[in-house]
Image (cartoon, rainbow, N blue to C red; front, top):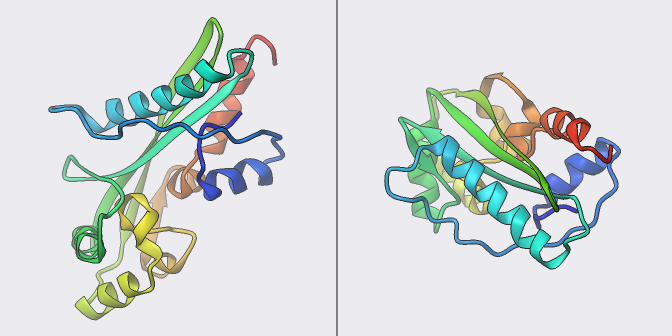
Length: 183
């Protein structure tokens, strides 16, 4: 089971040949004071998976949470266009990290891991940022961009998993599934 309504995660799992059902989890995604970004995404992935497991105790549940980190700051989903423009402005012309926490849980078994990918953005003019935000693409994405969409024109390099930047490090999911006793 996938504890996520993200269409991007569903597309990635389907493309990789996995069968699953979707059961969403509603968890508070507020970072805790002083919480490191890696701990934050790991905690949320685990909380999402466990929320679904509580309703479906016979299941193996996959939870995930992705965030963008720049200068140690977590950039979650923007609240409005101005917030999206602020975020993209912080990312342009430099590198940042995309972190995804992945949790696989079942009754009596669990694994939690974090994937990190470094992404470099080309410099963007104010007009570039304004046009990108006006496209609407940034509004439901951590860090206010989707590498698989219009933002791809500004990504000059990545170091790590491309699917992680989309929202789910598929190779990590595969490795964790291989550890599952029922595999």
